[in-house]
Length: 195
Ligand code: IMP
Image (cartoon, rainbow, N blue to C red):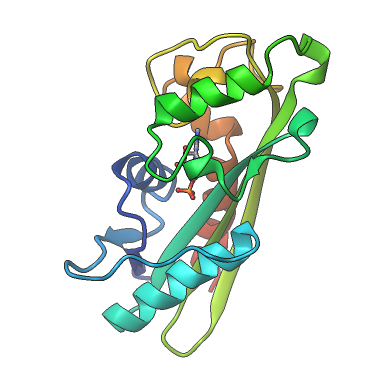
């Protein structure tokens, strides 16, 4: 069976690089068309936002498209930043500003209370309206301070339960073994190869 070609909705090179590794040999990723307007991500949850992006890119390109949306849920913040993870510290916040805001909000919070999880929803959308959908979750906690140079976003402060105490930013490709995105896209990859 030929490897399917999917137009990738994300223009974030950090995310695209991770997805390319996880979907290696399972899909060929085509960059999102130049000139495509930004999709307004105003859904109420990760699935709505992933679908908004997948549908928009699929319609614009006229080809099957793949999109994902990710959120970090911190228990002591009642699930924040969640769907607002990209703009927790403001609309044009950098990764570092978002990390600093999380650490400031958790100041004085003891280790046992710093539980958190990443969730990813990944969707493949076809021009005929058919859809594949997969979820990935990783449980962990927010460290007291940033560690590591790898990864992106909140990786320097997220420690997965399945690891050895390292943050995602201290891992290389090992991140994908445990990560929300690794899990969601491996699951999607299985669906693609059995469709
Ligand atoms: P998005 O909506 O899927 O682009 O993700 C929202 C935000 O969550 C991003 O801007 C990052 O700050 C953060 N994020 C997404 N995925 C990861 C990850 O794998 N590690 C750390 N932070 C992430």
